[in-house]
Length: 403
Ligand code: PMP
Image 1: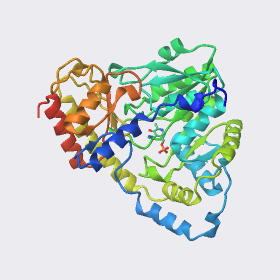
Image 2 (image 1 turned 45 degrees about the vertical axis):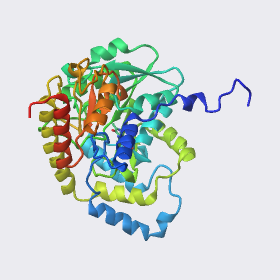
Image 3 (image 1 turned 90 degrees about the vertical axis):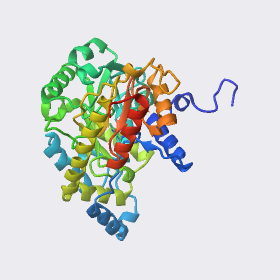
Image 4 (image 1 turned 90 degrees about the horizontal axis):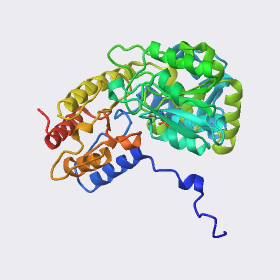
């Protein structure tokens, strides 16, 4: 190795640790030391995977077909089921060959950017954004170009803002609705406007629909695939079973898109990881084709917790939390708390505030810095009702809320 060479490659050395996983790890380690930490950090349902899905996996374990390599793009039955549910839920009919099954939605995100982004390409990234997107864009050689919308705009960007950020180097737009981290949902009209703008530009849109089934207050949401069919040649949909079916640990996601994109992404996966675990794929098949009552019950629980969370947060002076209508996150604007003395310290950033909250109230939240500008916190309400109530009451005690 010459002195000019670095031990860790520049490409990988530049990656930041996932901030959401880091907060979760810190909370878990404090808990292991016996401290009663309440975790609002992790984005995963607290429910067990529904039994019929677990049963399908147990059955798959007895079938020797599942002990072998299978096609890198996914089991044919699962790809067919994904094509069917995507036609039903996203209004896009296509051949099952346009589906690539991945190790969770996260791998679909990575592969989508690797497949369409070249060195020096710009990718428009509405902020606040999920913490993995900018890293995946950079790993593909691209530049994430943040387009910010604050609480006053319900954290949703407009075509005018995108137009302003767009240059000849723009290759793609990332779109995520319902959103992690904000819980915002674009209306059908807003979705159409963004899609038509992108179609007119001829850029790719990578649309992450993993929270598609977690909607509240009767809000309407439409997939970009349905809203703007003219986009299909440049549209990649990302999805997975993790959030809807409480299957975060099973690691099954997928991407669907134009045939040439899916073929290229499959070539990448054939060298990267080959097929996704066959047993997990069979479980995902059972999730997509089985009964959906448990999904509805989980959604009801999230809805109840969402209302408690927003009410509890907005009762704190200095906190402004728009009502999220999707996913399972609240994203309060906490700029009103910064510069104020709290328990003997004066936080000036949301990162310092989150640190203080963990230290003094033993409550784990993720600071806005993980998702874009400082001044916000992300709180997941995918945790038990009692923990939620306890966590909120500790926050109110520390930050001065009306109980
Ligand atoms: N997209 C978004 C917006 C997410 O929040 C997540 C999980 N946090 C994923 C994709 C990936 O989910 P998984 O890899 O668990 O399927």
